[in-house]
Image (cartoon, rainbow, N blue to C red; front, side, top):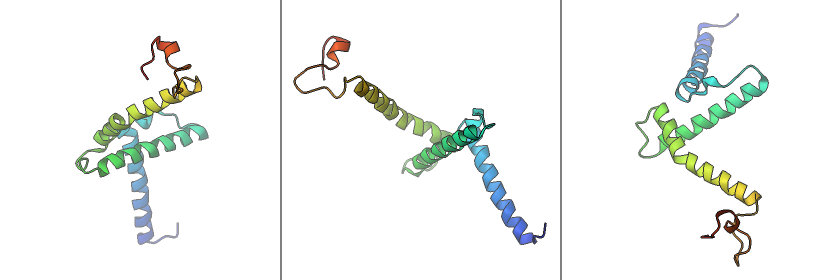
Amino acid sequence: FPAGPRTVLVWGRRRFTIEHFFRTVKSEFSLGRFGRRTALGVHRFLVLSFLAYLLAHWVRLAPDGGGLSWREAGREAARLLLPEVVLRVLMAELGALGLWPPPAGGGRCLCGVFGRCKF
């Protein structure tokens, strides 16, 4: 390997950064359970890792999130964002059933499901 000490040092730092990222992702975000034996598994792992890191990073950038560890930032991101995701999925499913948004004039809406419409 024809490389000088400076090149070895630069590559060592890059390798350490990458290994530190994977160690953090696997331990702090509990993504070590996902399979990485196929190309699709590796792709899913990288996408989930990037999303978890990005969301936790945004929480840490918030004015009141400066002193959070990565684990705490990940939990805070889930606490803040998960209800919004669940609500959007439910609204999309209600929309697919034709129950959301409720039509003007009271036609078919959630009354058929719940018995009485309050929307």
